Length: 255
Image 1: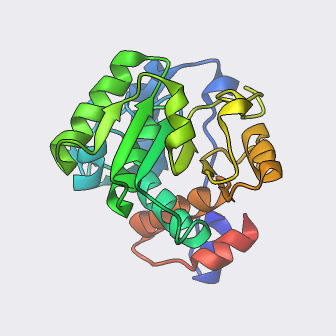
Image 2 (image 1 turned 30 degrees about the horizontal axis):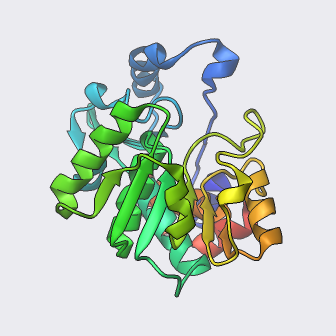
């Protein structure tokens, strides 16, 4: 997406994958990798799981959104400074407005409170969700995120969910966990909790149709896959790296 869009603008542009799994490394490699990127003259980095929060102490500056979310997925390298941004929240917001417009936002359940989950929760509240319940296998992480969001959006709009049966009264469900990815197949919650009136959104895009989306669609739910978020977050990252506003529709076609 990045390289093809750059060609449309006449830019020499190289985008390379640095895969921690292939390298046999973890988040502890971040200081070394950031330093190497600077030495090789990279203009920036996209940061993904499991490094979106681990990268924070290594940065010189954060955008307002990244600070409020507590996670970074885009680092701009400029004049010896590392500036952290979060384009995930904007990516989810734009995808939601495109694919689930007109849906009720009174009560939403979100599964997952990690780096991507923090951005999605921020986006949901920005979109106007009145009550957001966060669930995570790490209870303390969900509590911390709920507290951070309450400080930004006000009391009463975010809570750490205690019982997944809340899904049965919710308007919408968002899966921001890795469950459903090719490497983590399956459902992030019991199928019995779904119902046709529920809208269901995913942030996973490998595969594009997770088991959750397949089951929800078969049940008659309105659904949103993770492709739109992937494209729109990339478009905003491209703008941050280059200073040029890309054509997100063209990037979507490439995606």
